[in-house]
Image 1 (cartoon, helix red, strand yellow):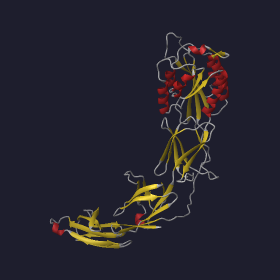
Image 2 (tube, rainbow, N blue to C red):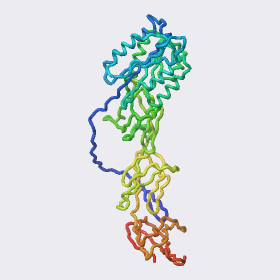
Image 3 (cartoon, one colour):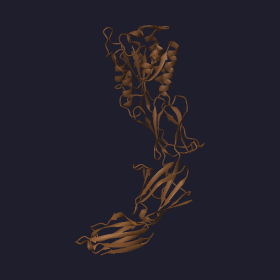
Image 4 (tube, rainbow, N blue to C red):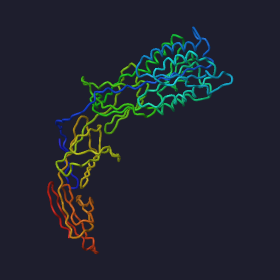
Length: 465
């Protein structure tokens, strides 16, 4: 199918054809597996006065200590795990109320499980419940690390008692990328407190001793495990046929870049499986032209998640045989928008989302193709005519311009260099007028007008005396 566009006496042939060819490339791939991140778990234990109360078979503090010690026994055997312990409400009795009663009892380090166990055995509940202050100080408990996941597990039987705002503190530290969304385990809390903690993090309420053991296990599992997902790049029929597109996953809370992937189909022709962290809410940027963004992506531990995005694409190619245009870059914009979407090289296929685009080709005169329709799985080709070469010869430098003939009107396209006696210019086929006056001629009478016709591949000299 052919479309003939005429503008300023210039014919622009847009050919819609299927392009086939062989691409030979050598890709060096590293077989080295990426180093998994270290998961750093900071246990934040409530040791306020209320934790001395009885709950099922024993005091709350004793039950919490027992199951935490069992958990630490298991974690110390795992690779890429580090632990630390902070407590609050264990240094000062109430009254009076000490809202600074929070302390990092065991900092992060390798092989510190025995130290944490020993410290846990001697913690005694005494004081108040400064949750917000403790969460804020947790931000300083994680040493700088480029390949770490920072997790806070808060175990408490009460709510904030010091007029702090745990929700704001948690949100601020998540936005700074200090730690991921915390886990909160409520010990025998009133169900109405659920809303109080849901804004802080992932909330679980243990209503008895057995459920506390179960909840603690679930929390640790979710803290450690990644989960699987796939990204379906949908064509205009809703089928996941698009691929080979760069994708970037960001943490919605902090804006931190988490993953770069090039979308891939596996050996079964299905979108490849990737691993994502269930503790992160993601923003996905799919780097099509233009890009597609999917916000608020959540994945659940142990469940395969399918992430879908509409990305129907077709390709555009600007063809030229002229050696003078081999370095040419064509401006591509979304139809009706001024921002440049892409500077596309000639003789190369480039994919764009299905839709209408405005094309500006920076030749002389400039060629504009408006509302060019890119269709799904279709190759759209624009073929540029070869230019003609015009050499201007002046006895003296002067002032002047070149105009293209637009039916009855003239349209300016180029100013002659006033410092040269000879100038070579490449022009698209068409009819032109050259208007010139020598620099030192002091009367308009000496203005020269030359009419020329330029043909593809032609070469001509024009004397301007």
